[in-house]
Length: 132
Length: 269
Image (tube, rainbow over all chains, first blue to last red; front, side):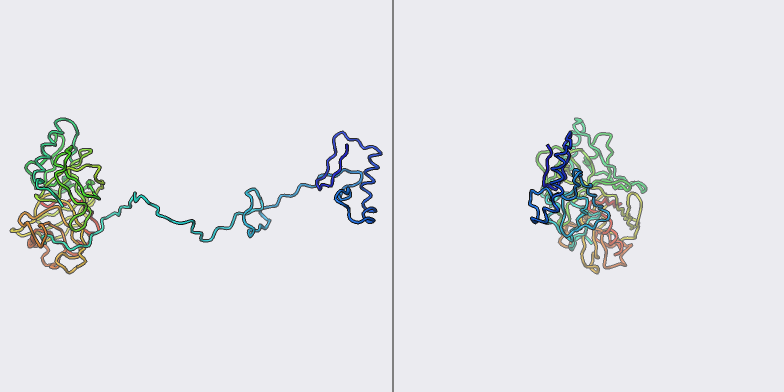
């Protein structure tokens, strides 16, 4: 059975469906009526078949053209909205954080190991009492 | 500070212990050759009872009381950051004495290694009599190496600094008088001091050695420790006028302070 819908998604033709004269009449009524009926009674309701624009009476609704993927190279991305999902091709890299010091430094060597040994021992400040 | 009344017997005890170790094959002691290539053979004689004399035949005695100085080879220096137990012989369970973690001047404790016995190291002790030795546990110290060495020729009144076997500096020095001679032997640097007083009797920089005067048991409140230092009397350089210390020109003292490390061997002949 032929099904119509108010969904914006184009309806596909059911396989094996043959158009009969009666069906064509129904379709013609339904699809041609919008102009007269719409002008007479106002805006179509949510179930009104005439809300499906762009379909010719004798043609089933076709899939619309595939949306062109945006070109990350040319499209101006809006960084102000923050980072979106990782798969968004329009999304550029987040701008670098400015001087974020991180959550805190801390002692990089808490155990005190791996002491850096100077090349030469530093003299100790003291007054000797050598034999002179 | 060395705290034992029996440490003077340490060398004899070490000799016996070392002979036992060698004889039993329980641990080969590798004597470290501290001879001075490129210079005359050390003129010092082995100390009586020197444990090096008792080592197995393949280990050559080092000659000097504290081991001879080897330019051209890296010398091992044991550094301790805590009080260090010293034993008369390897394997002893009770120490014969304890060295403080720092010298009386605050220098970190550094001991020249003269024989490597594996888990035990024989070290030259900076104590009287000159040439005293003892054993320490390797696990108690950190081993560093020094490439420099110093040779003092008392007769010629010169000092030469070697770096990896190459003489890099030779200077005239003042040495001790006949009454208070500069002791000869193989010693090492135990103190590096900055007096902060370039015009003082020791100059700005002074190196304290493991050597002690053979004539003076006390000097200026100290125990007669011999040093290499600057002087407020430059005219004394080249003369035998000191109480045993080696006086060097101020610029040389500065170079030594910038170059040598604790544990650097000093051969005085």
